[in-house]
Length: 306
Image 1: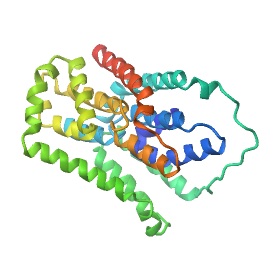
Image 2: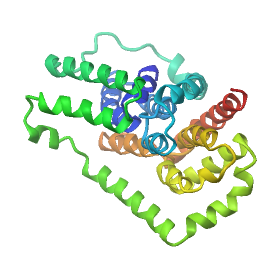
Image 3: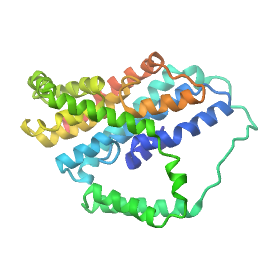
Image 4: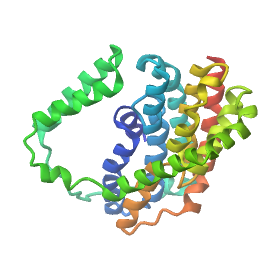
């Protein structure tokens, strides 16, 4: 969970669960353990950790561009809330799945299939990441810094393009496209204005109220469309900067409430399904609801006092 949370803050939560879910499944099944608590730990930590930075998830990227909050200032406000949230998530999972954690010991002598490490690409990737983070802290626009790092890797690659294209998840791209189509339709039909008019009296009451509205909307239309719906109206609130930070925290933490709360959750469930492991809605809800309520409460408390 620590690895998932920290890496998600740097590389996007959806990317991290795409990479780590097969690894978690491989290890858990090889060790004859129940993979469900480890999968839930992976994705809840990815969601919580991604709230710490502008580049942690898609909705934070939208907020970063719209709000123009510097990378360092954004991280200083939200990283502490993410760290506390990771501790909360671990504690709740340790309680809900205590039999798994305190049960039979891990079997000894189990060999796991490891893929060989392509060291030149690993080294180039680390260099690109360090340069990208330096650019973020120096105030370079996030989109430009990220594109420059990606360009550095592309122009120095030795891997055939087809191998890269084979890793593209077309169904995931279609799902994202569908979300944006629904969001666009909601805006064109005026439903977004109606929803905001309905929730604005409550959202204007401060961090707590805005967090409740954002969390509810995130679980109705998903967190990325929720931020897109809020975007035209945040400037009308009393403190737009505080509102943006609240939206970043609330919409991200709210993604842990149900299996449908974020795209990362669905990615983990779909990959697990392909390996014969069923991560169901009710099973996820047993720990997801408690993680969301407690982490969201602590996150709101942190923003209210800082």
